[in-house]
Image 1 (cartoon, rainbow over the protein chains, first blue to last red):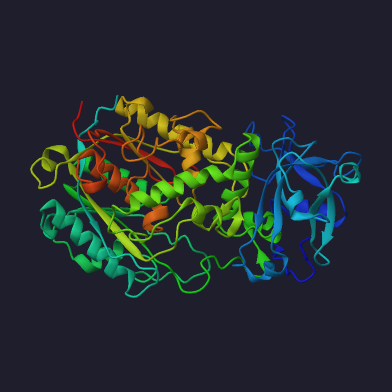
Image 2: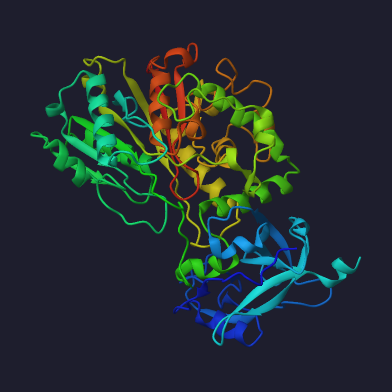
Length: 151
Length: 394
């Protein structure tokens, strides 16, 4: 299992588009940008709806845990290279891309925590865990869905 | 079909020495490549009246010093002092292929007569990708905190999606890397000229970012290549046999920055560019005799073969097997060794090889009876451009 204890992660800097996302994760809630015209969820946040070009976008909560997980691994990579020394103590580690059940098409990056990196596979069920970086920023992260890991 | 089909041609080509690290300033590499390309055409430097490049250094966190880490149009102007210069440009929304396309447009518009396009690439000292500092700004705020750094990992996540969705095996990529390395042995300018690669070397190589091992990634080098373009009627009077441009295209698709892992970004980028190229040239994938497809990371070749229409989605790793991409195969591929063989120059070397194959000037790696020569000059995502050259216009 990757040892994340010595990793110093770069701290996200919220901007006009992304501040509501980080305000929500600090409260332990996952909110994604949603088009008020066609209902499409998207991530990363953008100026317009990527589906219908509407500009009336609001952040709304999506389900981040629960029985059977909240989404699936859409893609992943296992990082071995230690070019970025801050992550060197964690290699090999799984960086994953997740598609949430409530927000098809929106893709969230994260790490697969609490499991060997070999558990990262496209289609595997995951749920969100929140990792506090400092008073302002809490990262959404992922672990295998409980029902799946209990099998 | 395009009204300007085969009205512009590639004439001379030039290469600097390629080295692993920066022994001389990059400007000297670029100057050598340009001088060689002009000489190969049989022109004098004073004939050159158009300049174009895409100067970006793809490494991050390094100082940009003109003449050292990039070679801009201004740098080249200052070195050459061209007495008849009448047009120049640096491009942004496309890679070096866009600089070639702009030179084509300038020649067709009659605002220059002999344009030279170069690509110079620096290999900075130390870590190539000096990743974001303590803070992650912009699109990186959703990726950098998770250890997503350089472009390799962004390509790697799309590649796992492709592999597992299509129930494919990364070991099949050995065929591409080994075949291209064999092609490299016919290209004395390439970094890996004289260095063999076996299937076992590939399969036993250390992982960088799974599914990419070391040999799936082009090696950073210091060097430059250059090409002279002119109108078809002028090209016929020059020393080399012309390679006529039958058509070109550029990617017309862009997804929100920071959205990584999606294959549609590659597939729609590639198919939009190829569609323009097939329509303008009047050719189809079945007409192609030889292909150069950008391979900065090996998986780019998969997305290129599939999105350009050479094989159905999900089948590219099977398509490249059984000798198909050998010099005497059904679709000889990256016949100069590709970026995996030459080192990281981005797409201009692919364009040069496409032109050399079309004009029958590829020497011991020449594909027999090659006429229709296809080039995908950069990854279909973000900066993709495509070209078709022919030796005999028809």
